[in-house]
Image (cartoon, rainbow, N blue to C red; front, side):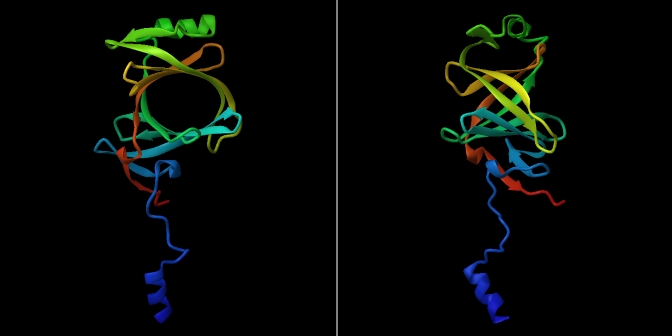
Length: 180
């Protein structure tokens, strides 16, 4: 009994983790973002080469789904994005990627000018599924550099687009592990 009291005040290396960060997320975890509760449905890993890697999670809140991205290769980067209907909104950029293997350097969308800031090939995989897929990612940022649009290409004709914003760690809170 006395030992339990001492260990309580000292802390124990067997204590469960209680302060989870974005980088700790796994499938089944729950988090809060923008006053809404989200659940992690899938986890993805990206290998950018030369020792650079990042993670991304598909999160859902019952009505919406989004991608939560984390990279600490060159300082911490956290972002959240939602898929764009490219056939409806940015089909001309999608077509350029398919036919010319590269998009234009700048375009207008939703009243803003978006400029190409990076083009990165990578190997992409979903945790729990075998194999990696080759992908190229183009990132465009608005003039304030607080929002972005990314285009991801896998294969010849598969191009997806996402619009998102950069976050600070404190904007994601109350991260809890799965009760499974």
